[in-house]
Length: 123
Image 1 (spheres, one colour):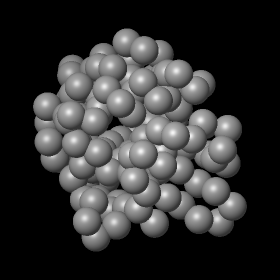
Image 2: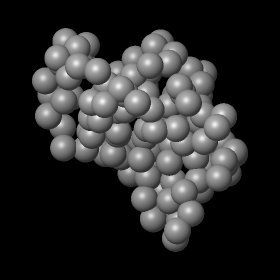
Image 3: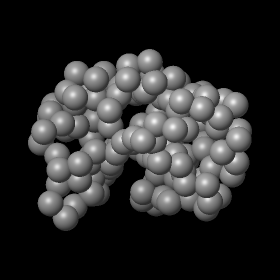
């Protein structure tokens, strides 16, 4: 179920059973690069799943061995996408679970800082 940024940022991480950042390799590259750079710089603890990755070697070159070997980072090397919803294919998403429902917030480049700030502030 989609959720608005206002609803997400007004809550705290403890309001959710689990959180996950879902990052497609294919999509807005500036948004994805910014997100991953901020994730690493801020030492965010939330699990990050990178999907649609064709070669882990490329990820090592782009983001370093430390990124790949981080236990919080899941790399799904198959090229097929795991769409969150029909309106959210190639954008990063914050997945928030509560009971048996998964809420998602797909975000754009100008919302990356807000998402990272929310995670950094609440962890």
